[in-house]
Length: 405
Ligand SMILES: *Cc1c(COP(=O)(O)O)cnc(C)c1O
Image 1 (cartoon, helix red, strand yellow):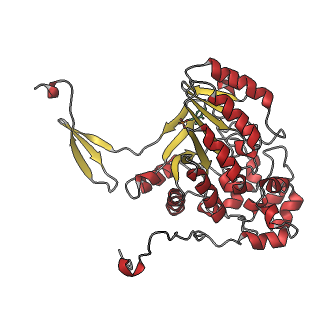
Image 2: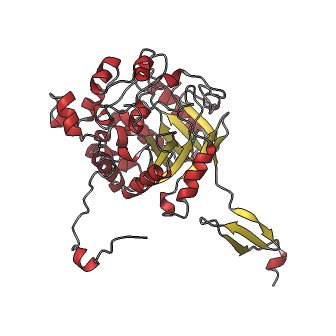
Image 3: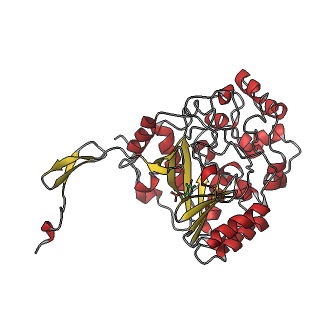
């Protein structure tokens, strides 16, 4: 390996110096330029206010066409907007989108194309059968000890490959009447020790609403842990305010799963949002969907995983893309996912390696896929293959006989 040798004595800084967090990944326009051009009246306070970001979301063809040079496919797809998943992009996230390249990864995840209207074999509106595992509306109880609580149908920005595109973005916001029923169900089922708040994006709700939910759940003695699934740190980092984190930390153990797609999302704003969450003691995990032409190169995936670890987010799940209607252009062969896993495991920190899973169509839950490492047996020896492809022996303990003294 050819690497420049750094002389530590000369480089070393005394304690107290902070590493700089330069924006390392790509060269899209920094937010201020975008802001001056497209939101000239927005003040700094406006831009950093999550309510302003929500009020000024890009939701129409007209608005979108002013920000980016629409391709024919994008323009035509927008004519069907409303028939499928709605369009919404926060001004902040729009500032990360390339105005002239329709193939730019972040642009493809947010701007609809005609491919969305194409129905391919095996695709369904609800491939995971969530609606069948729903004892009360808005609650999915698939595993014995934990539930998925869909607290809102609303997101600040809609990912085109969303597993819940059948239901999100239709209504204006959350539905407190449903919450009462869901909480009553959780309270009545002592086997539930883990509640996962998702949606929609729970962090699009106000502090008071989130606190209402967390405090009610905390009153249930058998609820040991609460998790929030969100993309806010990536699409609406302004949402992570000192007030929010001060409130959240009252409800520990609280964990958070952050949806991340591409290294371009790891901006100084996202970095700061994750730092505030981590500093308030919330263990952070990531969820990434494997997407064709977006993050399915080992280089991109490695950069994303390393970038997440650097901002204290543990890569948790890498999902095979769910076969929702109109998702063929996003889906990769399963062999791609295994290639990603194989390219990471052993080659980099174990903390940077997510679990690669398929959420089984029909409601089987998440099933991990791991490349075969057990080569065979020779007598008591188990033959196992390491990350370099070399085979090693482990003297296995077989049955009670080997334990005789
Ligand atoms: C993903 C999921 C969970 C949580 O699963 P973990 O593997 O514990 O993260 C719970 N319920 C449903 C319905 C899910 O889809």
